[in-house]
Length: 160
Image (tube, rainbow, N blue to C red; front, side, top):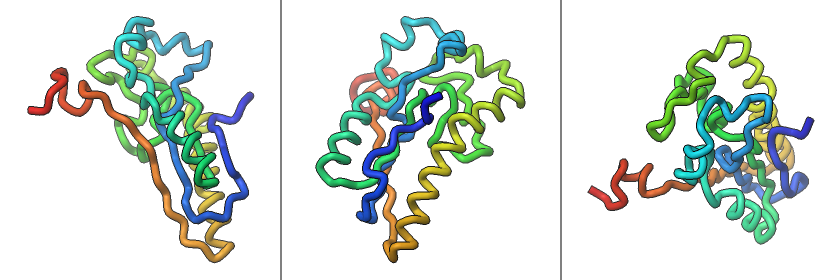
C-alpha cells in the first residue's frame, strides 16, 4: 500500500514545513466513493479536497526546497486538518451533500481510517518537526488551503 501522504524534500534543513492536508482527492476503490454520486464530485471542485493546492505545494517545494507533506486522500475519508475529537473529522455532510458511508460509520471503521490515513500523516509531520529541532531549528508550519466562492460566501458567488 502507498503511504497516505506524499513527502517531498525529506532531508531539507530549512525550518519551513509545507503542509497540504486537503490536497488529496483520492478515495480508495473499496470505499465506493463513500456512497456519494459522481456528479457531486464534478459539480464542486472543492468538494473532495482543496482544488489547486497540490500544484501550489509541488511548486513551492521545488522553488524553496522545503520539506513538504501532502495528504494523498480526500478529506471526506478522514479530515487531516481536524483534531481527534472534532465531529467533522468524518464529515456526514459536506458542502450541503450527505456522505452516506460516514453517517453509518462504526467506531471500528473510524479507528481503521485513523490508523491508515490520519496517524501516518501526523506522525510524519511530527517526525520532521523533531528532526528540525534536533538540528537547532525552530520549525514553522505553513498549511495551504483553497476556497471557492461557494464555500467562502455560501451559495452566492459574491460577498455579502
